[in-house]
Image (cartoon, rainbow over all chains, first blue to last red; front, side, top):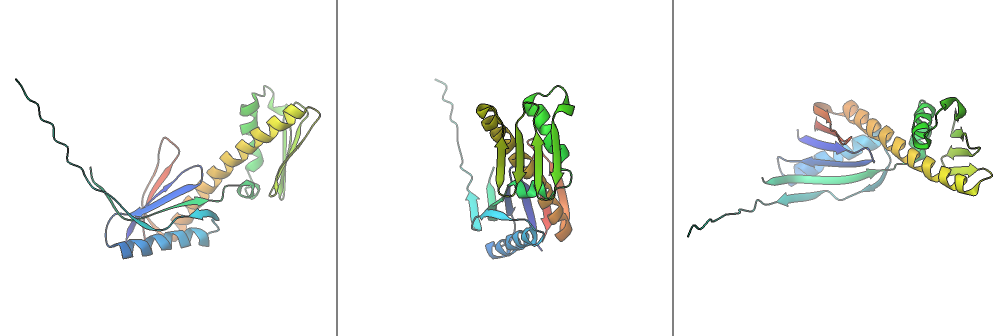
Amino acid sequence: MARVKIIILPDGRITAYVEEGTFDDGQKALAKVLAGLAGEGIDFEDIGAIEMHRHEQTAVENHVHNS
Amino acid sequence: MPCNKVAIVSASMKVDAKALLENQNAAVAVKAALVQAYGVKNPDNLYVYQNPGMIRIALPNGVRVDITASGIEATGEDRREVDKAKQVVGAVVIRLAGLILQNKAREALRLRFKMAAEQRLSNGAITMDVEV
């Protein structure tokens, strides 16, 4: 079982994502969410591809030189 | 802070007059929105009737507007007021249909999946965690 986080905006846009597990598991869970919405009569204008999304943390170092 | 998502998808629901026409309370919402948009002082002068498949509006300035699944038709003597009515009603339809669909999607998810968390944010977004 996967935990899917979903954001529904008042303009009709929906974003759903999974943060844990494999991409394959996440992909299946997201497909179930979309199928569930369609099954309850939600019509979609556009459905994007299920993607992996990763922002790596960038280390930033500050050096202060006192002269 | 790292932001790692294993899988993500974005979709857009079809936001059009259909969602509004299927809603039984649409006339009340349309009237309230138009009273505000036009700054109508006496709401009794603005008529909104809802029939199956159609919402008919009579504005205080004499313009009549029909909302159907095929679009928005406006008629009246003053061309500028007619054009304005189409724009104002069009914006109202999209805004209300979006809200109706947002709620419909929320209900659909609640019905189909086990809900772990739900929140409404100040920007109007609904966030949900569901077990799938």
